[in-house]
Length: 236
Image 1 (cartoon, rainbow, N blue to C red):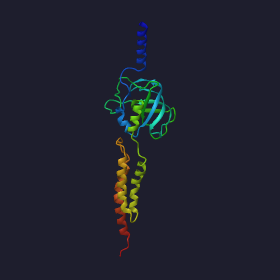
Image 2: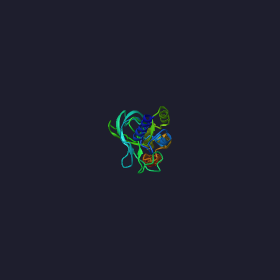
Image 3: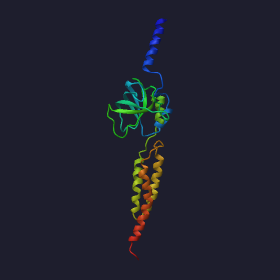
Image 4: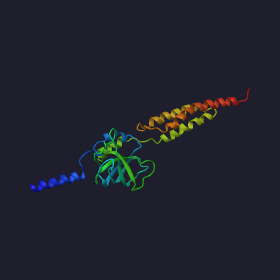
C-alpha cells in the first residue's frame, strides 16, 4: 500500500515537472487558431518536438527548442521536411488568436509532443537548423484535428499574380487603335476576379497602391489617346 502511494506521488511529481501548471500554448481544438488557419501568409507545419530548451516561458524568455517537420500542410516554399529550432512569438492581452502573455509563466511544448504549428517564414527558404518563430496557439496533432485544419486551410490562388499583372498592364490597351476601349473592362473585370480570390485575412493591402492608379489610368488613357489622335489627324 505504501509502495503504491509512493509510486503515485513520484508519478505526479514527474508529470508536474515535465508539464508545469498554468496556462498552456497547446490546445485540443482548432477554434483558437481560426484566424491563422484562414490566413495564407502563415506556413502550417505538422511537427514532433525533439528538444525543449525553455518549456515554461515568459515574454523575457519565451519557450524555445528544436523540432522535426513531419509534414508541410501549407506554404512549402520556404520550409521543408527537416529539423529546425523554434521560438514562440509571445503576445499580450487583447489578441484574438494567441495565449495571454504577461509576467506569468506559460508553458510550451515538451520533447515528444506532436503538434500543428504556425509560422510566418516569408518567401526566403529557411535552411535546416534555422530558427522559426511560432505564432500561438499550437494544436495537438491528432488525426481528427489535422483533418479539420487541412479542410479549413485557405490558400492563395495561383491566378492572383497573373491577374495582378493584367490589371497593371490594362492601361496600355488604351494606346491601341480600335481596341483601346477594352482597357476599362479588362482592368475592372480582372480586378473583380482578383478581389474575389483575395483572402479576408489580408488586412494590409500594399498591392492597392499599384492597383488603384492602374484602374484610374485604364479609364483616362483611352480618352487621352483618342483626343491626341484627333488632334494629330489632318484637317479635312
